Each structure stands twice: as structure tokens, then as C-alpha cells.
Length: 366
Image (cartoon, rainbow, N blue to C red; front, side, top):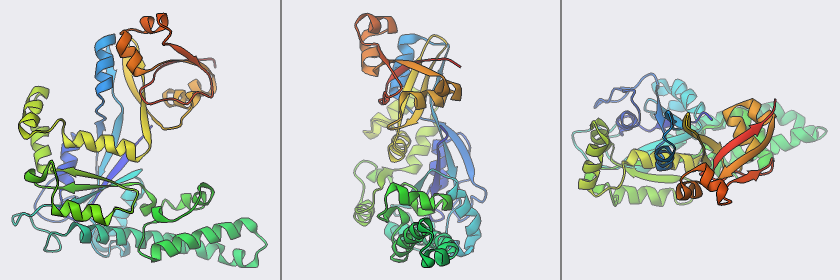
């Protein structure tokens, strides 16, 4: 399952530094606006301690973690919705992403220029929100024109439903709220799917702080928390500069020593990737054999045939059954054979809803 997260924010808030930490691709990180013109794309592995533990038990020929694509999108500015600062191009890049990682500068440093002259993450958030909302309003109003006459006649019931839904979104956006705040049901949501609205995407606010604030945050982070308390959004505190130092270390042992010295249990970028999974309502199941131990990404609520289809469409079409062990049982007993002997290997059918961490084998016929 392809997953793409777009890193957005005003120029010079730490987006490219964060991207460099997340990816092997190197974006230019310079102390001036618009140092990122084309969106940099990096494919990164999702950290999962369970995958490593399964590999220890099975000793496979290879280990295959699941991956996420991270897109570093150049800094937006006021007027981006009208094309300012290459705005249309950047907004199109965001449209292609599944989720938005909105980086906010939450640190004072006179040596790092702020595009608006002062540090105010809530103001910065509102600037980006406004530009994305204006672009969405433009898309909604264009579609309203298409359905307005049909809806007013009242003869086309479907057109009336579409028009009424579009008006709900229009009112929400005009009130200064994002599309994700609009109170609609799943059926109504389908009426705007074709518009790929920017502010309907799930968002995580990434507060980029100084090293002293890495563990507990600061007054800027507190202000962001207060500003987004009514949004269904994640907040993550991270020190991009420190993360870049961790990423530059050669070995796992060196990184662990560095983290221990700082009193941290894992790199912030690991937490960011895991939080992105949560944001997108995703989970992981595993396949484990001597050839390969592999993590697979699925949406929560997937049934066994859908999960099988992530491996290959033929698996879903010809699904017969799934052999399932929980991760905890597999680790406890150590082998698939031991799980079977102790009644911990289950045979599940087409209606089985896959759990996070399930270790699965599929039987199919095509």
C-alpha cells in the first residue's frame, strides 16, 4: 500500500532538515527561503521492533520492512492560493499526498531568518491554513456552478444532494475552518472525493523545537496545542537539528548512546513515522518464513481477503483461508510449529478482520 506524506510549512521552519533526517535523499537545507524548488521525494522504512524480533526467531534470507514516501514541498507564502511564490505548483504537490506533516517553527534563534520577521507558530499555521482553505473554496465554488441550476429545478434528486453537500463545505471554508471540520456523513463525503481537497487530508503538526525543549516542549508548543485543541490532528514535538545529528551517526550503537545521553528512548523521526501511521488509520501484519520476514501495511478494518490482496490481487480473488497467529503468541512459542501444537494457530475465513501484528499465511486458488 503506497503511503505518501507531504511536509509543508512556511519557508525556513526546518522542513528540509527534517526531510534529510527521514530520508537518504538529501534536500538542500539553507538559511534562506525557497531553497527547495522541486519537491524532494524520499522512500523511508517504517521502524517496527516486532519485525526485528520475528527475524531473530525465523532467521530469514531477507527482511522487508514496509515503507512510506515523504515529499518535501517548498515553503508556502501568503498568496500561494493565487499563485504567489510558485504557489499553484506547490499546492498541486500537496494534493497528491495522503497526509500533511505541517512543520511549525517553535524555537528562537536570531541566526535563522524567519520569513515574517518573528517566531509565532500559531500565526504561521493560520497562514498555511488560509492558503489551503482558499484553494479548496475555489474548487468547491467551481463545482457548485456545475450543479446549481440542476439543483434549483429540484427534478434531479442526486444533484440536489450534491449541491447541498457542496454548500456545507463552502460555509465551513468561508468561516475560516478546514474541510475536515465539515459535519458530513460518508455518503456526502463521496461528493467531494473528486476534488481532492487539501484541507480534508489528515494533518500532523510537527513542532520544531530547540534541544532544551526536546522532552517537554515550550511556550510555543503550548500555544499550538491550544490553537488546535478542537481539530482532529496529531501534535509531535521534534528537534530537527538534533535529529540530523542522530541520522549522521554511523551505527545503531552510536545512535543509542547519543539518545541515552539526551534521556530519549528513540529518535523523534521514528515517533513521527509511527504517528503518521496512526493518523492514516493504518496497521501492520506480517508474513514470516525462511525466505522472508515481511511487514505489510493495511487499513484498520481490512478483512483477510483484502489483506491478502495487498500482497497480490490473485491472493484476494482466489482466497480460501488464512492461517493466523498473533505476534505475542509467535514470540512466546518461538516457531509456527509450536504455535500449532499449542492451539495458537487459527484457521480464519473471508470475514476475519485482521488485527495489528497478526502473523499470517494465505491459502488461495486461481
